[in-house]
Length: 451
Image 1 (cartoon, rainbow, N blue to C red):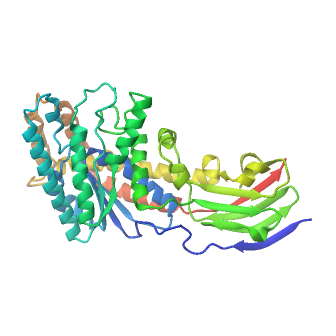
Image 2: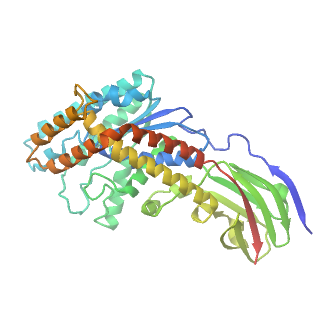
């Protein structure tokens, strides 16, 4: 006998287990050196928020500059950071402050210089925190990511660099207590993972092929620890249906309606409050290292008391897979099935987010490298001739240096990109608007039919 139930199990307004750390209208600055400039770890954090909290709109600013040190952050504080009127700021700096080249020397002749570098770093990063605190900015304290001085990858090991970063990390931990901020202890957590990985594979290398810059999966691990510090584990959604008693249906972070239950077949509509986090192939390695899926990417469906047999799950017009009554009773995590319409929608958000991220990191932040260093005292920043003359002189001045070719190429890219700056920023803004349209969850129709 057909049992048609035209009622809806409503979810209370705030379905998450806790309020999100960031709020609508927050202006979040991610401050740092090349690891922040690349932007991957905070790209993942932004993508998590765009999919988990679709109605929460905040602005995110990449304030990383390749090669930067704490003194450089102070120099550009007004024009590159405070100009955004930040309400929240995370700071990760130190990799360049320790002067890695000092550790290429095998004796103790430059120990005094090493100590001085650490003392200068401590004083300057405290000034950074003071400047941000003075404008009422909420602080997130990031200890420096690791320098890999233990794996067997090809670049020369500069033994002692990671130990120096450990001292920097102690400073950050102390400052997080002093300023009562949130601590993300990258150095401690990444050391644990790197050492465990090297025991299994001497070439593991969490800090990338150059011992400094993590690859994309390494940045995803960093994003996990960032989220772990600011967000409690939470569900994308959860649906539990008793096929013999629809009134016992339980939901979390979603709204279920229009049940149609009959022998061997069940259907209903569901509107989730979030989208699954879109997992791509290049971060799969990270999922075997940190429990992101278990803690932050569960989209659960349970159907209890079905007759024994195999059941086909269809969402809208998409056939997802075939499941036994036991699998459905125990529950399946829909985020593992990339053909669901929810996951496909999340991938659209991911593609827009990646495009926005690439424009910022490869174009806008490339320009920032020169704007806040070689061109910071330029008398006429509107004249491309003046800018070109200054950069040509600067390029000529580093001729013969190991970084000459990189610097020359970067300067050429700057001169090519600079006239397009306004247009690029407009495209970044447009993509942000597109993200907040693409991430709006949609109602989906579920069918579970015996076959």
